[in-house]
Length: 376
Image 1: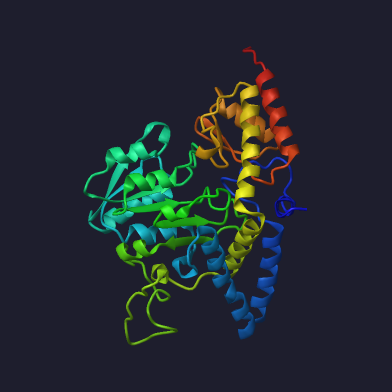
Image 2: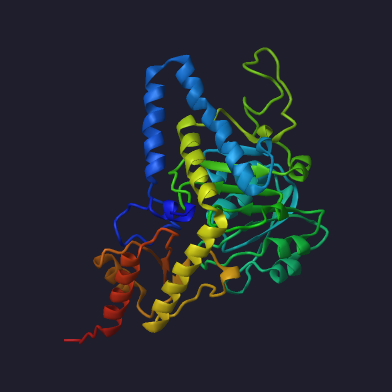
């Protein structure tokens, strides 16, 4: 079998799961390694603790490999929001962001602004359909703008930002801060267009929560003050008392404490599995499933409001049915797990989504379209 087929074979969850954009059930390899690492930690032996501690470096190296970066530019974080906090609390000037952003971006930006006494000022934009296009950003640019914060893939619309085109618009003198939670590991992107990339392993990487990370490019480290720099973020080696060492010149300045080694292990294994299968191959397999979901919705007359073009999407298909609550109930009753929010229903397959799940979706949408109701 090919590496991709081996990877697809590890999806052992029950048919019906179409909610990978919300949470990724842990992979078998991640589960196995967690148990093994937990047994080592249970011994309390220094050699065992050190062995599990090696997971930190392994995770940094693997993430750096997929980002095309150096390992010492990658930090492990409790979440992607923590990475965004390190980035946004350390900048000043106007920062462009969409009002429709996930709260990890919008709330962090607003809190950073308050903490800085408005030395950092949000420059909110509300582009059509919530899509942060290069044109939408260009309209908001002026000399006061120092950075743009954006989700690579929008959690509601599924729209994928063209990072290269956005970099061209932003220019070399402003920072591009990217939340890649909905793209890392399933989109074969050139992240070098960004200055900061944050992600989390609990969705598409199947590594559970606590497995966040953040990459800070050399340009980012020149311009972002390490405001939230803790005991692990200094120039010192080991425990230091009776002195206050300066922040480290490397990306570790943007860390607070020693990472959770179990979380680091989960992240390392999740990223390793993706690396071995090949991100480009995963993206193509996922694109085929997204095509199937879109075609299924079209066939049953349900409006698709997410992008159809492969270059403008990732793994999210957003439906806008006339009766969203009724459709959400029908899907749940059929054993399909999706996200229903407001007037939309979000469907998110993965590369390992099986034919039975797609068949269940087709049959449910068909039955939904044929149902009729009478008023007594």
